[in-house]
Image 1 (spheres, rainbow, N blue to C red):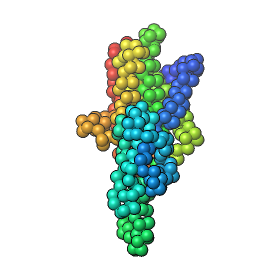
Image 2 (image 1 turned 135 degrees about the vertical axis):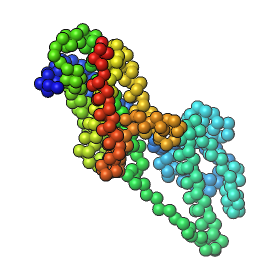
Image 3 (image 1 turned 180 degrees about the vertical axis):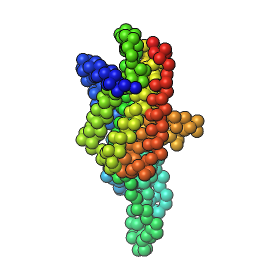
Length: 377
């Protein structure tokens, strides 16, 4: 392989990129738009849940119980209604996500030391959010029970019972449980998948549609020189997109990077080689740009979103999909990115994922370079 001829192809491709600034601007805007949309819209934080209240008691203990909700950042006591049917209507219209129904003797039962039922109607259309909301309600109710029990014991002159078991909660790596710290590291991987694959998937079929492929075949170029020369410029552009996405994550969303920046960039570069090689393989097997684009989106972008652990937990998937996820390169970089961003771990823990990425890169590059030239139409 002649490096001079390889560089000549790369230089030609750089010139094409420079002469098409509109496409370059679109490529650079893609991560900006995706980060802004996903970063602000894709959130798992449950806050300001609108609540409807049907209070048939109007006693001071019912008000005291509601004050526990007013002091919580997770709930917003939005409506006070006069019937259970009205709560049903508000839940169906998604104007509230939680309804609280107090019985008429709520305060009297508590004063008598008896159990006072309260009905919590939760919108179960979104099961994950419903479980979180129910957990918040149960936590507030448990605290309220402790306060009421303590006050009753004080009134009766009895010693207050002390809890023998008191868990001390602490969340590691994401202390405030901010979903943006979970979303951005995975979103960077999705952006790299889309940009790297699409850029390389379109480069060869574009030559075919322009009619310049035959003139290139008439030269003394070897196939490896041609393909690697095509790959280099898009590798540089993809690394620039990666840098832009990481800068936005740090300065705009204030996502902390606890681990090694150099390690993250190095492993991301290996992943980019995987995506670019996959894109080239798609390109040499596609007849036109539309087919190349659709194939690239189908085999890289969708698995990166759905089966990489970016949003959905792989452990909760059916076993066949869990097995299939091992063939998704994005799965390994999502693990690496989240580990470096959130946990600050290094290569001593991440080396299996890094090794698999190297194997993917070598395999796809080898398959692409060995693909018959006659298939490149």
